[in-house]
Image 1: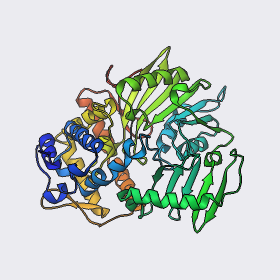
Image 2: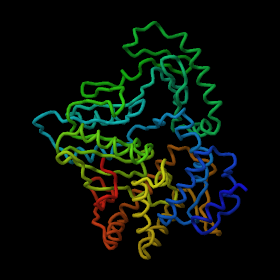
Image 3: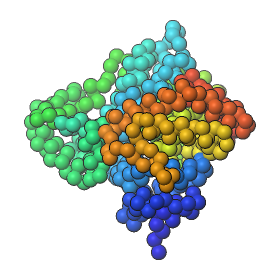
Image 4: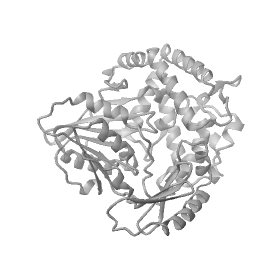
Length: 435
């Protein structure tokens, strides 16, 4: 007999969801990788002390609609290169604070898995203008097709569809609800616009625009600048000048522990002695978790593990994003979050204040059944991100990061607020993979 979603919730979290909330997740209609993802998520939720009453319609929608279209299976085994400008702005600030000019030699920054279009690597090149930046990815699309709403799809050299990404436009949600139709629409647009492209030697960017739709060939060339070079290569085959800093975000999470260790070992070889590696995960610039490594001699050591305060929220997704059982970073974050949620003074204050701000921003309100209820039927993503940012800015101003650090210190952790305002700890030896 097939286990229902609500049975799994009760098994892991000790209580059931209201039926109208749980009914949207039908395990029998979800792909196998999504079902195992949900089981890993519930394990992390239990470890993090995430109460069943924090479940909400946004989280349910993420599980039933978004996750099935974001896992590698949906992209032919390819890691989905989902990105957004400004997503790593905080990490750029972290590096700028750690290394101040003047420099004896031009420092080298390598962004592993920069994605395509490589907008975050371009952000870094602008933010660190005195650095030599290398953006590295195993696959850069040969063609990019933007539609009139700013959604885009990527195609390879033979014109085969690879993936699409929705913009912040309200219509973006519909693209993920019916990905097959979305794909057919982009393929049809591509077939039409490709015939209008002029002849090319394949070395420069060129484009054609018609009715608000724009097809670009060799779009990667549009992002390169005097201090930014983009390289199509796998990490394990990479050979570059010794790097001062390497960033590897939203990449290691897709690999099992042994593969991750091999990748970290090779990354260590690419670093200059004393160089820094920042590796972790974030969503659209929110709910960030990352480890900061240093190269000492022939190996790596972990300086800190850090996470943004919003990982403790009610409407969160990235704390539960893991591709393999017992993912070290996800498990550590869950353990730390569980310690904070378990504090009898911090958590009631924080949770209550968060409820107030969610209501003030007209996002949701806690109903008489104890569960969050949406106040708007559907809010554009851009508007939600703006309101969400205001909420977490207020909670930071209220002093909750420092109070969370106090809870962790009381529990025996060496904890602090790092230079970009995130909660940081010194991990115990063996907690995170070292390569």
